[in-house]
Length: 164
Image 1: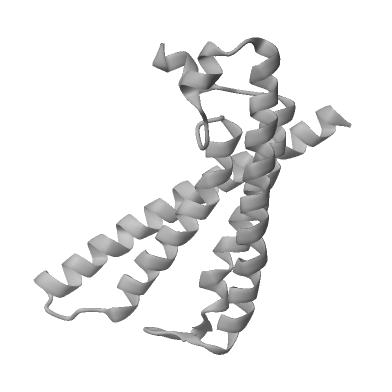
Image 2: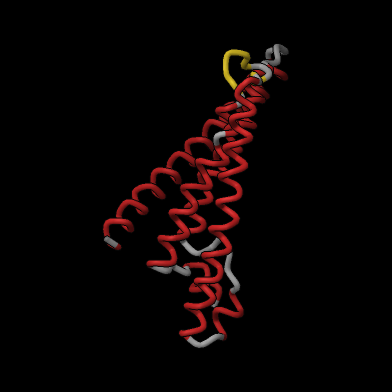
């Protein structure tokens, strides 16, 4: 069961990280298009700025699961390094529980916010609902919750190894 969950978590984290990278590429391309259109052709496009903003939001919330999975999101480095192994595991459990609580709150209110925003359209992209922009919060939070559980079951503290 543990290995099946970790396999699922690994694939989900890889997918979310890949999509976060794609969102960064989209934001960079749309930003360059905006500069080109505004300063070279003197025909600014209002939709490219909106796409940059939305893709940056999605990039952050899709990148969070990888940060949690690699143990680099929330860590108490000095306490973790100086404490005995039994307390380290307790500390990891406390951090995981608090992270899951925070992510559950973000997912809950993010979903509520997305539903409320479904009647609102995106300025510059009038055919799209704000639901799709706000959906980044619950999607990212749920993926991050899986990453937190994966990190608790199979801890990785890659930032601690490079810090010493």
